[in-house]
Length: 377
Image (cartoon, rainbow, N blue to C red; front, side, top):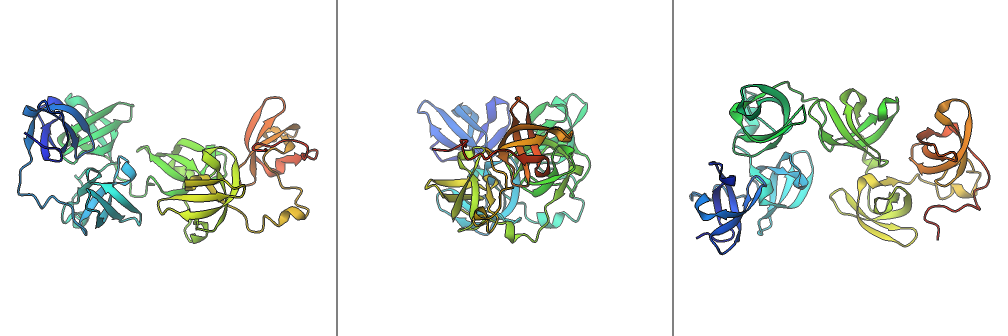
């Protein structure tokens, strides 16, 4: 019989093809739970569908210094890197080629890179398929090819495909797939960019959250907005030279407490090194592992400006009049959100709402000191 932890190969769902994995649980009735190397799981697999993985191993063990590809933060896509530390408990630290680092990555999320793969790029290694590649595939082997994108490389010459028409297919054999197009100038998931929000002509900073594979991208903006299927022509790389824009321990910031819409003042108390930060808020609250997209730096000297004539500064909760859609007529309402780039969201008294209204189209009314604000005790 097999033991928990044994490396095996199993006939996935009894389809006749064996895939490598590991016994995660012995059910005690000649059935076993299996964690496959490609991330799939299967429970109560009959013993007759399992075979021991051929020995002669060692070669297949991960070691410090090994060139690998790993699924960063458990996502579907593999990124190239190197094992920097073996934790000795089946997890590894990885230094990625793009400069990212990740600790305690599970073995099932890592695969070794083929030796010499770095060299093969310059030759005709064009037939190698990778996650994100635009392809055409013979859907269900019926003889007709449809365009789509590789969403997952199973590591055994089969691939999962997301077709342009919305269909999906898993474990498609390599022989049924052919590459189309190129595209090294495209953006990658995680890239910091600026995009023309809704094509209105103004660019806002954000990050690529998803590559749709058809030259459109989903974007998470720094101010919390999201937009899907943004055309490549509306996106530009964020200019480097930046260290200034990086968050550091001790920085005075504003953050969206628990992911809410409103920003609260505080200070970075700890950089977790994985794109999240601990924050000590000015009102005494503390929050750990806040995502970078929920944090913005405070302008230097903003605390001093209160005592002077900074009366034209607009804040969330202020009563205002705004030129609705720039038509020349002002309507009363209230600031519901400060976007941090001199644009504001407004809730009008007549029930209308408008987002990203330019500051020049807004004027304050009344004092506002007698009104209540969100978060007031």
